[in-house]
Image (cartoon, rainbow, N blue to C red; front, side, top):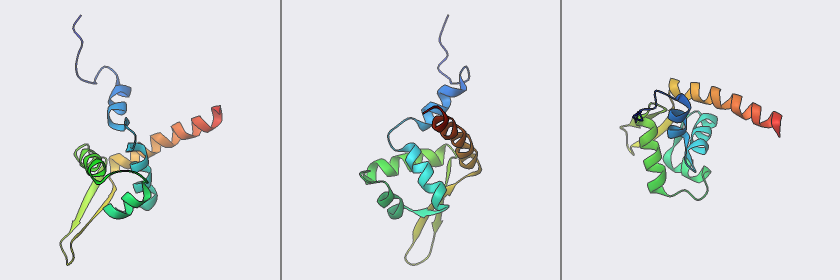
Length: 105
């Protein structure tokens, strides 16, 4: 039997591929609580993350339609990040996991 490289057989593997990593859940939660946040504000909230790592994860989340990148073409130009509809649905699901975790501790 040949193993399928897609995540279609197990949706949880797909979810873990998106959420797995040291900073990803913290980034999603920080953006969620802030509603909209600039890069430097987000970096300050995440003690210890490098610019390169934060940039990489934000790009991944934009590509995966988890967050929205808003670029304002004004002087000085700036960028803000917020959760997409997909990202808000993800937070709803994570809230259930959080609730479960509190109940079993």
